[in-house]
Image 1 (cartoon, rainbow, N blue to C red):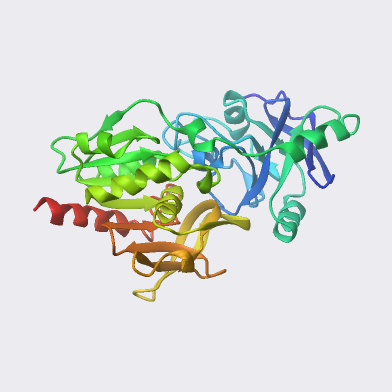
Image 2: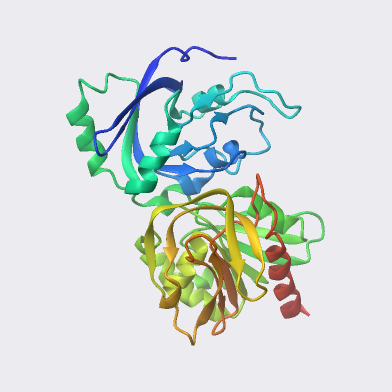
Length: 368
């Protein structure tokens, strides 16, 4: 175990000039990003390796992080994409039969600049009241460089997010004798999406974000999945245009998170930035068809404006029980359905994993 940074000072400064003093956690240095919070009690390793957090400094609202350690199996991608990490208390001596190391060393190995021992409750209340804002974590003397750092913080924008996280190569995964072939668009996909498909008998072909309809058709899939990913969905003009052509293929489509947003934009819908987003594993979602409420895992700062979807194209199928924002769309003009939340929910909860079964059922009908 490494405890070298335990006593080093670190600072968090927000774009409004507010400064939090704490201790360094992980790599020393300076990191600028958009400060957000997630309410998950567990799943911190999945959070740190979720590409949807690209460009963001992530705050864990649960006060103790790292108590069950880290391992090589729970990563959702090959690396971490967070800009920085904030916790109240970091546990350096985890206890769990699956643990292979502690959170402090994990951050150092992944070159993540973090801070602990600050009032995360106060920070979260600030973000809830004012909305997400940019910030900087630094192990330098923030007071002597305040104006210089504030200039960097206020100028920061999350740009080219999908382009920064997508894989440039096509990769194929399956178990023996797969029944269906799915093309999974990598907008910053989480590995458990792939695993949920593979365990349901699918051969999964991961393709780069800008793959065209012609290239998809050549792969002869039974289904297409648009994955989660980071950034402002509206900046992906080329991908949105590709989706318009891809949906004309008539192949079953399932979209998650960013994939849900891009599909809506391709069909005449609009998106908006939320005040502080939905991030965590306890977001309640109402299925409007059944009337049931599910607890879901979520990670997004943008949402589809439900009434912007043309009635002849589709309808809102799920809404968030807290703020009534759009959480799902059923399309009638094309063979597709999408959701804003994460049914693969690695780290939990598993309430909505049935949507993968539904997707497989749509492929089964087409194949048979």
